Image (cartoon, rainbow, N blue to C red; front, top):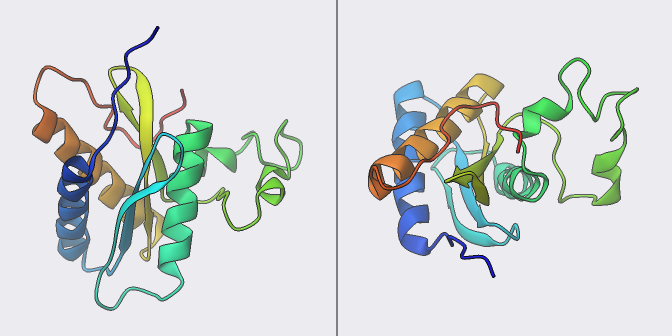
Length: 157
């Protein structure tokens, strides 16, 4: 039997608050989404001025990062699994509208286990990643030193 960590609304709110602050600092309007380990929505915030397409994209990015246990931008980097000669070419076509292979989704990894995903949409790729990383760092701060949260943008578990 394995004990597992579960994200709850309290942690999701902490992450979204930090993401919103990072987006404001960058001067961009973002939608920030937090999902659990099954890719199901816990919380989402669409900032004023964020594109009306960004909620669906943020959800897809978070779903992908959580379920596939890797940052979404790693799929299409040179030699990545979703590139034309990669082992997962076309993977996004298997789950239309749910699977995202572009920048802005990062798995939430606590003590070595993927427990969810953060999806960010609305800025350029660098902004989306910076907002996602800010959310992860806020989770680490909230949980304290008893837990280890991966806070780098390039995560592959």
